[in-house]
Length: 188
Image 1 (tube, rainbow, N blue to C red):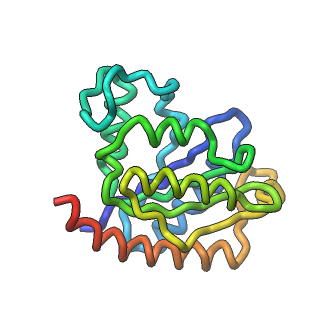
Image 2: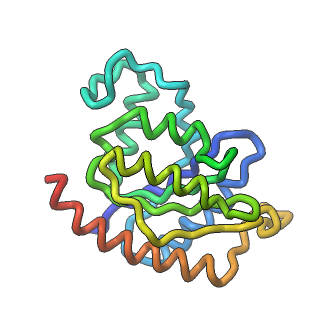
């Protein structure tokens, strides 16, 4: 049975380009063939600023939105975060979502597809990796970095990758698969 990969669109703001990049990466992951890949849009969970009365490590969730998010996170064996850069960091919606649950993230690998202007979201990815390691996740060194993302989206809202985006994505998926199989034993 193929491991489950959730490709999470991390921006929730109106006018975002994350869905276009996420759809492209989802197709790449499907073609890669080593994962059962699912595209997950964080905006659809409509998570408010953390509002659970108890610490997430206890997993005693009171709210339906938390239970739904917990089930989604728990269902995956690995993740790819499609992440923009906001003021040199990840979007607040992503940090909020990461903090909503804890054990559901543990001992799972994560890749990052970052996008933005001249930096391609690199600063965001670096900050994100700090949070991921605190959640006992293994962030991949391999990554996809998309500079000047708006120039790569056509009038039909399709993201057109360059060759290095595709090769970087394939390398990240290869490594992510290795880590997924290795870390699976820690979750038993």
